[in-house]
Image 1 (spheres, rainbow, N blue to C red):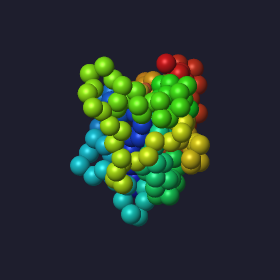
Image 2 (image 1 turned 30 degrees about the vertical axis):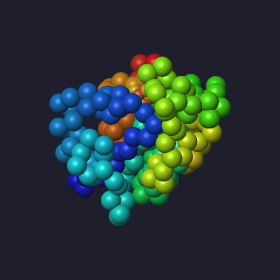
Image 3 (image 1 turned 60 degrees about the vertical axis):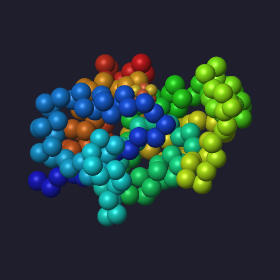
Image 4 (image 1 turned 45 degrees about the vertical axis):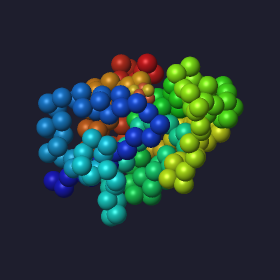
Length: 180
Ligand code: SF4
């Protein structure tokens, strides 16, 4: 059986969704018989290979231009795109900054913080520019599979991956579908 190729990437996120992926524990050994992880934030190779992958997995929302670029790159290089976790599905906890104008958020973070003296908002070509609002991944690219949860349980992720391995688009139901 040919292994399906998977690449993962995290955008505006904590590492929780990827930690939940690792929480699959020993079942990951069974999965690795059918899956090749080509790149991920947890492995040496960080970027999806040029030739592309079968499944791309994105955790985290879109909060700056760099994340937008990474999401588009993953979409271009994968056949099936999975939004993993609440942040990727609808912005999740990152949406909290949407209550404030971007300038106010930057000022609070880099200038007004109690422990900051002579703070300055960083500006550089190599830094992504903050978007006006945070959004889920589907605001920027087409998503094929949604796995909500903060983070999604290891069981939900394992179920989704085994369905994909078997050539099916996973439909999460019951205990596997939650937003907390
Ligand atoms: S959904 Fe929750 S666990 Fe996943 S990246 Fe967002 S905050 Fe972290």
